[in-house]
Image 1: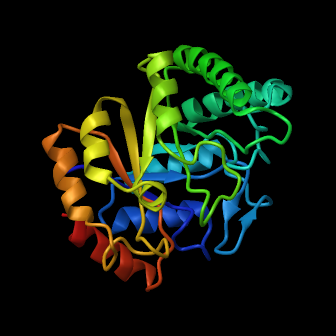
Image 2: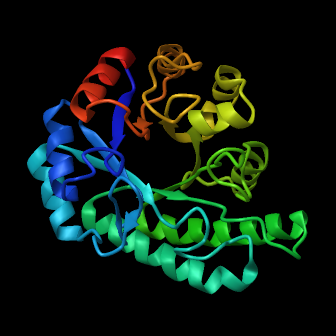
Length: 270
């Protein structure tokens, strides 16, 4: 069975982050992920007064028997790290990428999520794709030196992330194949792509060679993956058959008691 990782931003949001890791590990999960080192989600918003300390984070993971699988290197809307679709933001973007590569190595994490940022007014789609291609190509060179794999995550623009540039897989897959580096893969978020395009199992089978991570949540609602229109056990079965050995991430906002939710989800996916 695929390794299951838990996005610790979404669970036990009343606790300090290191205590969330401990509780997740105690439930039998061996992998966690998070959003931004610069802040921590408190259930309503990212609290930037609660930044993540690399030493504390690494110790909490080690003490809990948990591996940090990945985290986001920039914000979806460009508020952290800028929008790589805009060449004017590239200097800021590369500074952020280097900062996050250093943070990843400090906590023993080998994978980072990269996002396209927003569609830019006054810039053509072709130009934005060109800008993004240049940004990703250089980021991959930096990641190769740091021995980190970057995963590109398309997001839905219909429900959660209006204006997001990579809101489908086509352009992301094309760019990953063009850059053609083992340090650049796709993060396939089942929740987001079910909303945007569906055809989940066929896409996975046709693109498993470039998929480096998965995210999941119930559709609709972005809550628990059970009792939803998506057949997650079938997806887990498919990626197991295809030989996928990475993590399958839980990035949902629980409607139930968090302990009961995570226990039931683990049983559902097993």
